[in-house]
Image (cartoon, rainbow, N blue to C red; front, side, top):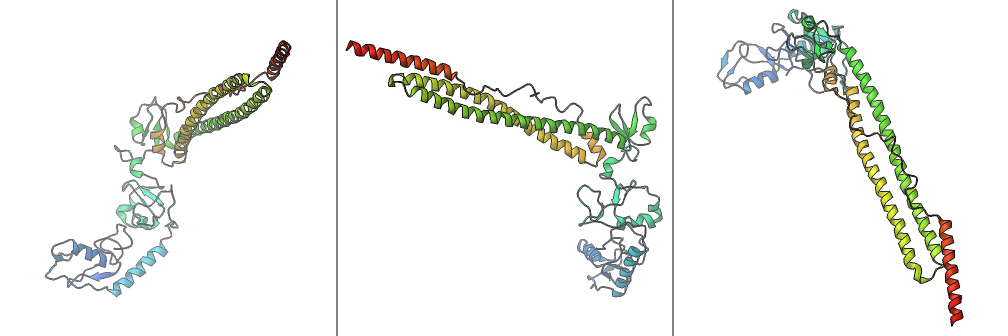
Length: 362
């Protein structure tokens, strides 16, 4: 096939009448002498039951033997080089990157589009734009700066570019639609409305990031409180064991009961903290997902997609205000150890006194 898929005039001596592009490997089909790209005529005959010239319809009893016409091939190559060199109006061709408007005609690799045609509803790179600059019929087409998803950017009623936005009805309009639109409604350019929407999204995104940061701090606070509570528990148990180690074996049951109380309080405290951590982590996951969606909206260059997917209601209605929720400073177990020591000392004194009395009775 010809390397250029531009729609060129069939009368041009360097153009294939099948693909309408500059010849590539031109061959003569026949005794009738008409020339075509080798791939074009081969593909044409492969899909037809009879062998005939696509141009004059002359039929052949056997499939002609095809040979490249080197004379025409050389002139076609010179013509292609001449068009590329002399077309000073064509911009420098660059490979497209993610997010850029690409040429709808290019095969891989895709080139950046330099213009979009409203009549063709197609975006063209510099090479494929050439027929619009040369062919009289195509010169009348309206060319604009490249627009992504051009078909979706066109008014279906008037086939005009959607450049205006009605804030009252939240719809996009073309320059013809606005003439029949209510004069009481505020109509602004799409770019202006998108700037406003992006500003709103930016504020929400900032708030979401703050909320994520706030919740991460809360999670860290709760986790640290649990760790401290665990350390306090170990210290309290050690203190209880130390205080009761001086007692007789008979009061080991009381020691075990006190340890059980400490453990139970710790379980309640840990469950309280873990429940809050679970809720916070769930909200963080949802807010991070929301943040990614908002970033996609902020990064999109498709104004219509931004307007059509912009949330109509507050997107933070279901979030909980955690500012008043504080990690308890008394999550772990706490004992008045001095009081405990006094009680044990009294118990020891009582035991000693009773021992002396028993000894005196013996």
